Length: 452
Image 1 (spheres, helix red, strand yellow):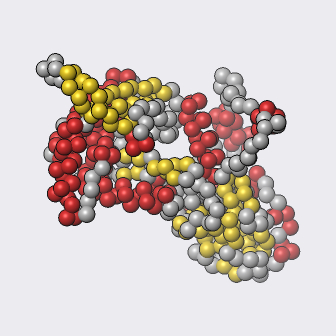
Image 2 (image 1 turned 30 degrees about the vertical axis):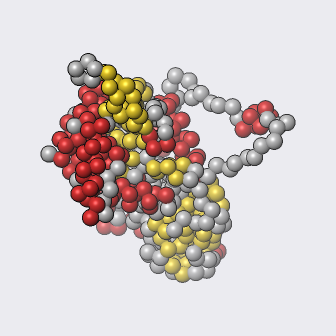
């Protein structure tokens, strides 16, 4: 039976991509593990490997095609003894085919294709080849993962995959699972669809929609303008941040932080680290201060997970890095347990590879908290948008010399940095957010304690 090759999901948030290049052509033989195509996601260009062996019987989606939906049919693989005559309707993408995706090994990252515009998302198992069988759903209505061979055997034996527990990676159903199973009556299709339908039902009316492209274009029909096509990264930024502002109940907390003690301490450290080629930035101290604060106020080290809160134990801090056309948020894992010099080196490496779009998905996904620093650009204060599922993000402004009232009531000057903490009220309440921000302030104003 011909095997459908589906558009893979190369990250948890990927919904569509560009089929940048076919490495194989129709009639070529492939083995499991062979690279067959290069796929452009919203952040990078990734290699797509074959899972099964056979012959490429038909290429359905031509290279260079943009906006290919995840799980859409892109090619058909013929097994030994099969010919193009066996393909029949397999070349027609369908809802049925797209529901049969199975996870594969995490794809390898390659150089971004020339002209590729963008990146937001630890490499997760990605949907790949699947035979042409009926869609399989678990008891709770979620899609099941099974190898193509396991699906064929299940179909031949009349087995319901939703009744089989997978023993493969990430619960994937493999050959031995279906061989050892006995036939069970399948549930009615209406029963399987009921739960998802209820989940998808809109509550409180349809979401607010902006003006259509046609409406906006008409407004400027008599003006000279250039139309800029959205690449994958910009589309993702638009979608996710719109979703964040519409669905995440933001509130904001602001504090001024005095940096004079930190600047003096940083200068002393940099003199001692000069021989090692290490130069600490203020941002390195901010990362460390926030990582420590997440340990000091552990209830803030959390993410929103739909119907629950996940509280993490390590401090995984994401830091926004501006690149041409958008941004990445590489994550410094276990930042609370790393030295300032170690954080500095890691951050420089991640930022450099982010600008070259060479980060692997696991390097820019995850974390519970983010930092967005526009102080080096002269911005004194701003409000940042939370990047779901994070529960908060710290917007950092520039350090500016300002008149302040000293401890003894005298008027003096100090280097003051304004920060704003954007908080998801579903996870963190006002008093808890204030406690976290106070811990960040204390760490930065007395930086030597961060080394204890």
